[in-house]
Figure (cartoon, rainbow over the protein chains, first blue to last red):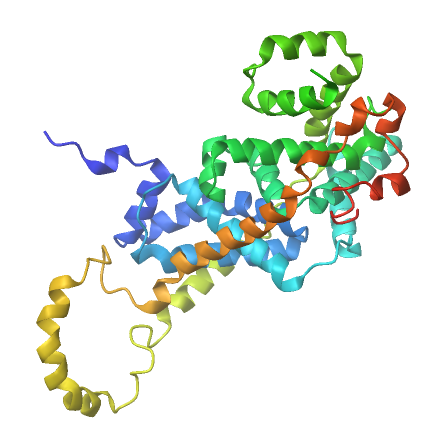
Length: 200
Length: 184
């Protein structure tokens, strides 16, 4: 019996192919599965929650537009993150964003940090303050990275993609991805040194 | 092997979670160099510290808005043939039909299959160019970084005493390859 080519597809690519064939529910499954991850990925690229949601919508709109031409050549995750990377970096280019920490984001993040730190029922003002400072420092440090390093670090650290998947997203070798991540760590270390326990 | 070489090698090897080619020499250096051990411990700590960046939740309207935009996209009229939408397409087609017919057979024979489902118009061919744009953006970014490659922060430790590894910010900014990055 001939092997069904659908058997070799990753499940998400199979969903995309199903959507291509007219199964609208498959698109909604992809939206439910990747929506939050894509918005968070873009958020860490553009550093603005409202803009990240807007751009996340654009990513799914582009997936919808690509339904007729989609070919499952790579893992679906690599494909969607590649689109999201493109959307995020283009937004950065468009706005030529100055490296500022907007009050809107600062307040928004502080609220989330507050919620996270207090959810265990042990309010500790020092922890809250330290957590807020650290979160702000990390956000600024990530934002200070060059595009390549930022994308590679965020995909690895937060989205937990493999080097191979990141290489597919960035259209480069796995070796280049490792280099970007290592260089990103070095730059982050410089930025975060005052906050490290082991900092000199 | 000096600290600069060790840090370059270990950084990459650490990402691979395996010893690099120069493993034995590197291991000897790291075992003997407290500064390098502290440096690598800091890199691990930095990686852990990134967890402090909070995850955001989706707004309740996100899913609804995506589906609304998709429906609008689906209902968009005239997607098939931009520029040939008015009532003059039939006279125009009639005027050109002799020429078209003479070429049509030849063109169809050479035309590759471009779609799995239905007809694909130009507005749906955004992906190739879109992805090329990403490669361009990343290439520009990579080119900008090449000059920084040999001047990683901390790589100067061999030439400088350990306490200079964390110089005051004003001093850092003047170092080659670091000042070019966006300020915090």
